[in-house]
Amino acid sequence: MSGKKKLIVYKIQNLKNNNMHGLPITKKARGGSGCGCGCSDSPAKKLRKTTKGKGRHFLSADEGAGMTAAGRKAYNKETGGNLKAPQPGGGKRRTSYCARSKGQMEMHNINCSKTPKKRICAARRRWKC
Image 1 (cartoon, rainbow, N blue to C red):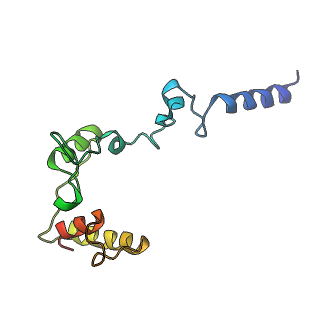
Image 2 (cartoon, one colour):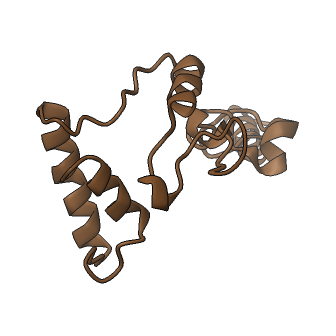
Image 3 (cartoon, rainbow, N blue to C red):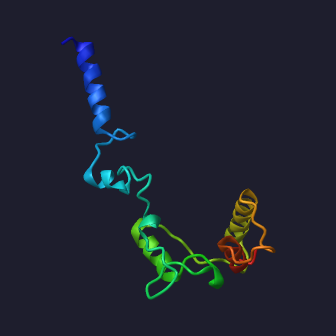
């Protein structure tokens, strides 16, 4: 077999054995847990998405949506991040959050006066937007 044919055969075989990122497919990745590159294995997805019971990480929409203190602590521990509680008193974080969440509301055509129980509306109330 010539050099070019070997290279083509190798590339085709490599594509069959790897995912779109060029990483080897593992049993974990085949199971639907992502490709192992981090694109779908985010720490936020690993947190329990529960709003009820002991050890919950998220508030219900009636309580103001968002993460609990325990949820922020778990996320920060997992990622090395620095998530903070809402800043309803004012400041740069609040201004930024209010602007971003307003854009999300407009993008999804959410009107908080008509549907006040939506999570985005509850979170904006919690931040005093």
